[in-house]
Length: 339
Image (cartoon, rainbow, N blue to C red; front, side, top):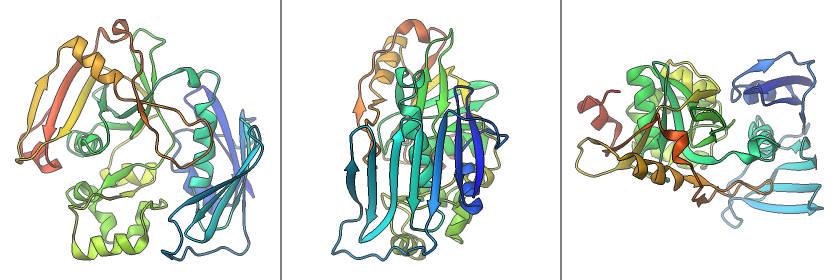
């Protein structure tokens, strides 16, 4: 068993121990690794079974079932996919976790614990969580904020691949407004991209070899195979990538945080056309406040629910707001969308 330590934006150190190949996969989703012997504020021990199980799709059982045991302060949580026990997370305290893993290369086992720890961190828990993605282009932070299925990730992929932006984070961004300029922090998780965007970008290489994504997929392998073989890329589904493989495919760099200078509100529209318009300042701050997410109170796979957060206009005086509507990534290319 090996140990690796990650510095999360200078707020905290997260130490994770486990098998080398699994740690490598987990490390691909963190931004800054430091010396493995350094002390850490959070410790996650992953114990991998010697007899690894294969998940067999059996529709007599639910896709995912969660069983909770132990106490409220020290829970043990079983993740069961169909009829296979994938992992059990034992939370000893807010900064100490032990995970028993029964399947191969389960990077989610470490990332779930890390996110739970960060959600309850004494400083980070006070900061809003946004339903947004974030990139940095020419030293300007660009926040892409909207509800689900509105094109955040598609617009982000375009800015990364076509304009050479740096990747900060996808889907969940922690918003720090304690300084003069708002700052966005990444959350360690696997980026998820729709098949339509994958097929029209440098990410399409993964369609020839799904394993290149280096991430546990959130839909069944047979479903992915059917979508790829039939080229049904219009379906409302996608694939997960490790943070590193995502950036490698798009040939871009990444970093853990960025000041925010511009907020874009992507919206999907029909008609294969591109439209961008500036939004009045007060309306922009209000729309951004409606893209908040509620933090999880416990370790569970449930989706984060939307909520309105209280944002002071004073924190965004140097920020501009725009709405960008399009139907697919090719609209952005054809329309010559530039920042």
